[in-house]
Structure formats: structure tokens, C-alpha cells
Length: 204
Image (cartoon, rainbow, N blue to C red):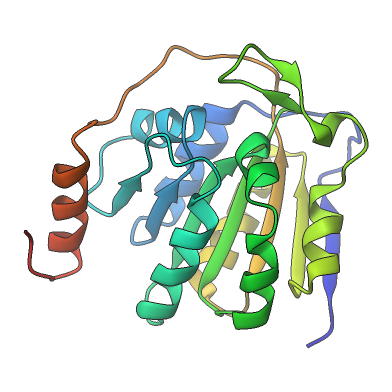
């Protein structure tokens, strides 16, 4: 498959409201299985409305993409979307290599990139210091990467999620804001069982 790399949106410096983008994406892809990165992405997804098909990660920095990859391989007929931040993606950057090798058609990785480590004091992250996350994903061999700077393009991202036509990495440039925290359940067993039940699996 030929690589597809694009920037959608027209204003090079534009950054989006994270909560608005996530809410609209989930509204347009209501059946997707969602794995969230720790911290703000989990808050964003929960703020958009609790869903049985949300799997929240607490404290497992760098584990969102590997978890999403395993889920996509196990459930090839489901749309799987990982929603994480630039800090966590940097922590687990090597996982993109495994994603590229396995290349499940039903996996979309959405990185909310504000160029900062939001959970530790808003220090600048590598993505604001020269690291090109979409470029890195492409270099690993992920066949399709997108850079999003326009809220209108959420429809395009949702179509990618629901179409299940190829592994895609989406870098969404968001504002450097910290909206009020919307905390999903912290009971890991309950989160796991809720998610398993949504997939028609036994709970334990």
C-alpha cells in the first residue's frame, strides 16, 4: 500500500478545542471501541458521555496503543480508535513499529497534541521541540497519517474510523488548555467487565 500523508485544514497555526473535537468524533462514530490514554484523553472521552464501549486506562503510560492494537487484532470486524496524548505517545513510541507490522485495517490512532506534558505541569513535550509525530508514524511504516487543524475535518476522521480500510495515525493539534477534569470510574475491574460485557464476553 502506498503511504498517504496529508494535512487537512488550511491554517498552519490553528489549534482545536480538545473536548469539542473528541465529542464530535465519538458522536459520528458511536459504535467504535475506544481505548483512552491516561490523563486528559480519558477525561475528554468521559466528558463526551459514558459509553460501555469505552476502555479507560489509568496510569498505564504508553499502553494505549498496544492495547488498541491487541483489541483491533482480536476484533477485526469492529472499528477501534485509540485516543491519547502526545506525551503518552512519545512514551510508547516503539509500539508504532508493531502497529505498522501488524497493520490492522480497523485501527485508528488519534493523538491529541498540545505540545506539552499536561499531567506533570505543562512542560513542553518533544512534539513542540521538533519531533514530528505523524512523520515518525509514517517512518515506522504506518500507511496513512493525517494532521488535523480544522474542526470541520472531524467528519473526515470519523469516516476513517468507521470505514476500517487501513491503519491510520491522526495527529490533532489542540489548544494548550486544561479543561475541568471529568473523571471516569477508577475501578479497573468494573471498567474491564463493563467493556467485556459490551463485547458479549464473560465477566470475572
